[in-house]
Length: 232
Image (cartoon, rainbow, N blue to C red):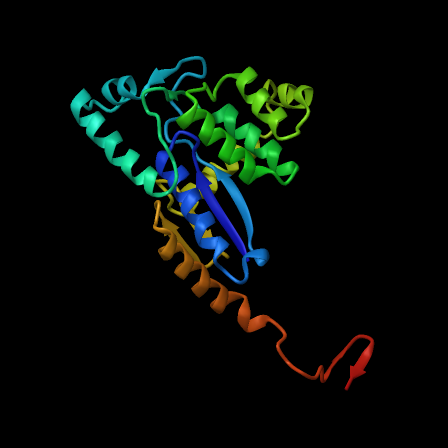
């Protein structure tokens, strides 16, 4: 069963959604049959690649929120994060353009480490206050997962995976996805937002029962024919 997840590195609800999804998946009997594909999404592609802003600066300058309102909003997210096992540190978080970070996610996909890289990027951004638009920072994250430093640096300085990232974003637009996280469950159902683990568990179970289980071979006797003949 294939699960596609659109996400952006600087989206706190995407981090919460990832944790809740993993918790939901862990309690399912068919978890080993689930294949997860992370898809790129940019909440603010207008940010300059070289610039960074604090969360308070970003809310004030880009969203027009007064400091007290921004603080109230981040405090609510902090409480939600704690319930999912995340200790958000918005005072350290640096807002920046995430396009280059998405390149690293696509590189990690090549080594079947996209979920691990997603986690490392979230931790770097929300917990450690690292600049996830900085190439040296991204290379260090690649190395931490066993990816060659030179390969990562060469990739991040090139246009490789630009097409794939833009295709992810276009696919989101074509599917009517305007916010993240967004989950598409085996091509049939869409789930929007950082839903609780129980909600995700129920959605995954329903999708499995409707799209996978009916086609599993549960018969005792294989009374059938194929190109090699018939079996009894």
